[in-house]
Length: 419
Image (cartoon, rainbow, N blue to C red; front, side, top):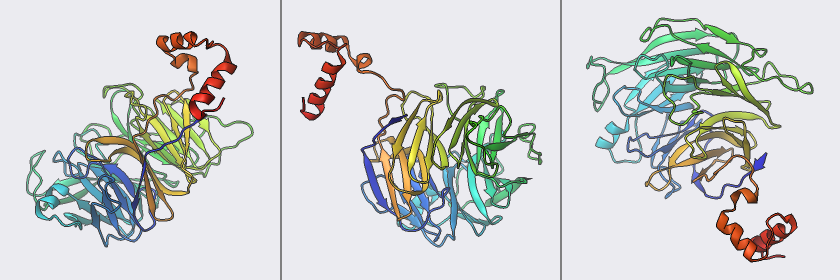
């Protein structure tokens, strides 16, 4: 496994403990540039725009114990909003199209507040049932998953222009109850292009939730439960035994083919706290990786820029594993214990989005590693990198590229001025 070093790093200030799902990257103000959103257990919300200042661009207060944040078109009006959920059971929606028109203060207030069940631990904002509308799906610590859709009370059309204050509410659609604790939730595509909702369960297992017809919002039971013995999971070595109670994280919609259409199955990744990472496609395990770290968060990001996503898994001690869809791995050692982690696009200087890894520590600091420059995942020799001109130049200097000792001396001299 190759180790890499990330050089370009910025640090921003944010005090307070952060739940692992209370940090996200996304375009909250719809300017095409992605911001960093962070919420604390003390009810403080911070939105960072660029790295020119260590202070947040916008902030919110008195929001309860923030457990999860998400960004998406929850109003179905073709622009993003910010959803913040507290552990006490309050859902706050911030719409910056409305906010920025009326207030240039750095303190923001929600345009909609609604009571929902308490004990939420994770959320996604996506069209999980294929009806053309974006829904809010939440996972609760009491082993329940619920889905909601925004219902506007004044404008009956399918798409509407966002008013200053939205007139409507989140309407409950589905409720699923489970027997085991939920890790997190994600969406994915099946082979026929049908969207599906995946719910991770202990021991590296998951449950697939799929609605019948598009637009059908009646309750459905889980249609398939995959156990630890299924071919969808890797087998551990004889010296290791799977802990059936270990917590599990899952991420879907991993692009394994550049410019893939919406009618093909996409793989998803499963990570467990005992260090297991598996890529699954159409219920078949493509590869498995076992590390000696406690993986608590898994994300996806096109780190190499080849149009295909890499899986990014982070451990509590900051060790981060970047794995491509072929199973080739590089590792980055952050060097500190982390409370939350996310990977995605972030606008550093308002000139465009950059690939970034975000680490929140237990000491109230957030580190942003940007401009990730990982050109390749596999190891290559110097012979593969040398151009014809370079080979000719070395030969003119009486250097034999097949003489490893001579090439080591040359590398030492060029790097360290030592021969």
